[in-house]
Length: 73
Image 1: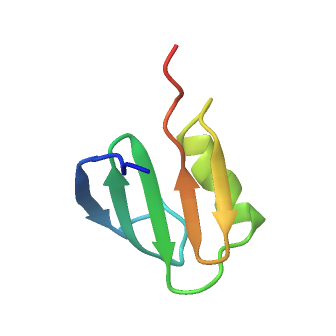
Image 2: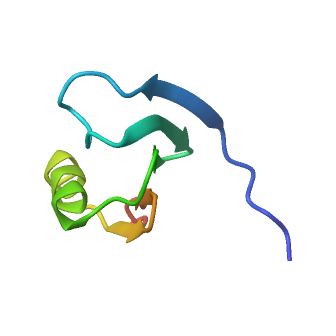
């Protein structure tokens, strides 16, 4: 199966209150956003990121929160 080639870029590291407290790095793969933590995120962290990206699918997997790209119309 061919793998999609998407641009990978590291956009920012944890700073201020824009991201959950445990955030170590925020990276982007194409239009997806990946938030990596120093420990497990909780539901409050997930909701904070969901608020930052309204209308996008946001999932939590232990120490990673993923903001999925919006499907093409």
